[in-house]
Amino acid sequence: MKIGIPRALFFYHYYPLWESFFKDLGQEVVLSNPTNKQILKNGIEVAVDDACLPVKLFHGHVRDIAGRADVIFIPRIISIEPKKYICPKFLGLPDMIKHNLPDLPPVMDMTLNLYNTKLNILEHFFEIGKYLNKTRLEVMKAYYVSHKKFSSYKKHLRKYSVTPYEILTQKNIKTIKPDFTVLLLGHPYNLYDDFISMNLIKKLQKRNVKIITYEMLNEKKIVRGTKKLTKDMFWTLGNNILGCAYYLLENRKIDGIIHVASFGCGPDSLVGELLEHKVIRDYKIPFLYLTLDEHSGEAGFNTRLEAFIDILEGRKFSENNISSHG
Ligand code: SF4
Image (cartoon, rainbow, N blue to C red):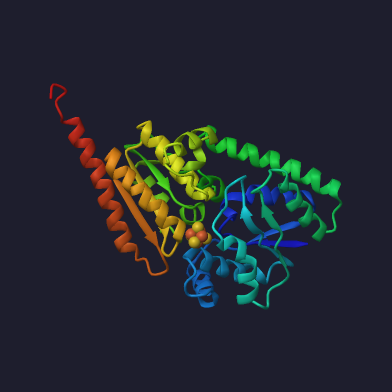
């Protein structure tokens, strides 16, 4: 069976796991094409107006894959770790897609909810296996193999300071002797999609900026960072973004922060506010907040990015010219 996976949203987090699992069960995995103008246009055409950009784009990717797949995989994701939720848009995503695109091939919309216990994850995969007429034993074997691969993929990101972008797009973004280190924050589906992020990662690489993303930090460091929050953040992605930022700010390992957010995203606006206050009030390092929507113009985006890099350069120049004697 050809399983279609849209190259959007949680593709940027789970793809190595999903690919291994389906292939191990003898299925063929088909991906939508990398985002382009037409895919985005197709998504905007059918999605509700007030949906955020990544959800609109997801619709476009589903349309792109529809003619090439027997079934489309759109899990109903509620929670990906205990005691934390993710944005409710993911919960309603399969219904939204089926409603807005009625002529699709069948949709596999199994629920992933790890809020209560980690053991639930197998139930999610058993449900998928049932749909594919696989035995529980076959599913367990495929799951353990794919889980192992997924764990070593995540370890690889941390050990070699690699972003998922480099693995998923097979592009090398290493900078030799970088001038600056910048913490790049945002949802993976915004950061690692070249079209949507207007090639932000490549632009930073061109300016010899080394980037750090939260995937490079181990869980303990993120948890240490979140201890600085006055209240627990109950969204997984927001929690990771803030935990990573607070930890690295505390340890003074970065020259600046770029936060990429989607226009109309509730979680992003809250995280952005918290971050900006903290950075400006306590750490005073350059901070750039970039908002993406379907109308974002590349010229304005580039100007803001260039100005940010100029500030980094200016600070470096001033620091180098300050006498150690005061
Ligand atoms: S977290 Fe924000 S950008 Fe992501 S799906 Fe939810 S509303 Fe959209």
